[in-house]
Length: 241
Image (tube, rainbow, N blue to C red; front, side):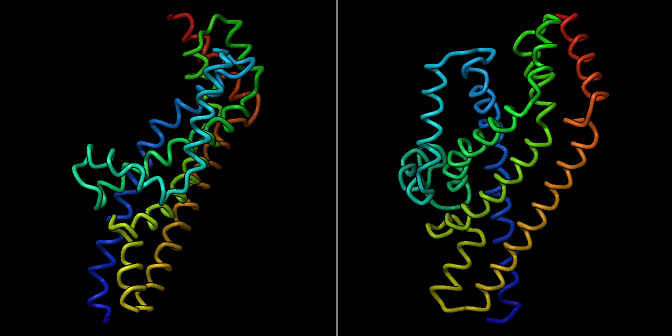
């Protein structure tokens, strides 16, 4: 296969992969962020302590995380068809990708939020801040660098999942590698696909690390001055409630 034949295939495959991973990441963040914060809030000593709810949510997350992605795709075929009308193609792949990523991201969020200085939470509480104020003004801003790093990790994992989704007709670079590289013995195309995936992952990791470092140096966990500004902002917020 010549380069002129490979180029349109690879261009479409790259776009399909970015499309699937992009939408799956958005859904994973929207679903996983509140779930991860809720795991912290409902834990023992949390602001919304509820041991039963915490154990139920934690168990659901653990079960979802432990399921191999290829099995998850098969198990969700009926649900995927009810939402997208099909079980193949990039739109259909977004459903299992997002559902698989939500519990993964939620655990990363839980870890990031637990690292927030408890003294800040107590200070805002003493100023009359409610749970929503603490989440919005303390927990999320203070853990933002770690949340960016967690999002980067999730995106990298989703790229790997999307490659597996290609084995069942989801499209993308994984589909190209299987259909042409493996089934048609186009070894050159398969290695080009692997190289593209490696470059994409490296760029995403670099961008995520740069963003996390930038946020960390600007405010998150960087010293007393940012914390003082945060407390002042939280105080102003509680006065308006």
